[in-house]
Image 1 (cartoon, rainbow, N blue to C red):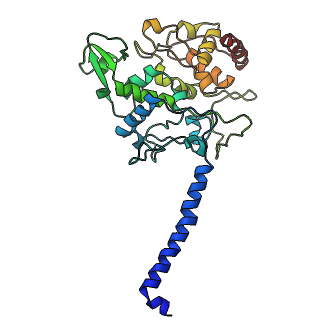
Image 2: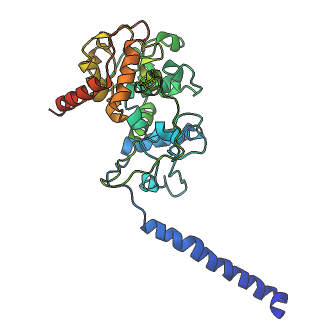
Image 3: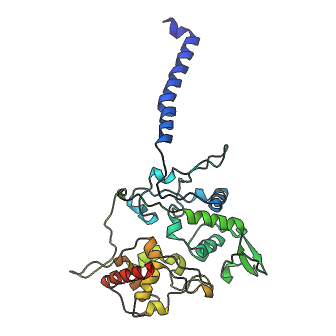
Length: 337
């Protein structure tokens, strides 16, 4: 038993034991993971502006409130088309030798998850207004405002990006509100956050713990009608607002809109599926293809349209799921030409 009484032998043996365990439990598996790790084939790396924007995101503590991980539970379905997988983070690298800000998955979701924000909300106009003061577009938001990322000019210069801020949110600032370099970089980063499509033939992971839920109501013997108000809130309200009045100079109103009230729903379906930029000359930002980006089904689009056609004093003819399904094919063909 001299071994246990000889401190040199005892500590040497303990050191060698832990060294061997570290080698086989930590180091070798880590090297193996490095070799067996690759981004998805269609993944697009961040460009220079987005990389700078990531630094702005970190500097302003955005990771404290926003996650970038779609969990495989049904309640996360609103944040992405599928649960996140390891390959989504494979092409993220250290900032530099001293700073490891590789993944910004976060640990708390005080604000919405941002994994797929580039597809959910691709409008640069919305992001800039939201950064200037989140209450402009989301009345109940508790997110801090970042007016210091913007400047005020009386005379515009080439390349200036004007942000249409309503008067009540200007806090006395007169002149044109211009997005600063860091604001544009941060928006570039947010717009780059998109879930990559899995390779053809690869099954998508399932969302777990699905609950049937009461999405709508219907008379006995009739198919259940989806909750158009809920779908509108999830897909449209951030721009067009809960009252349908939009934001003056930024997002057009749906209340009293000729397009919404038109008995021919083709243009409305076209806008939802393919986006709309015909009013940019009036100062409105281009609308993204919400229906296509969010992979909305015909019955979901019909529910949204009917909500818009019958809310805020609108009293237009409702559409059916079959109508929408047919028109989706029509506008798809038009968009491809």
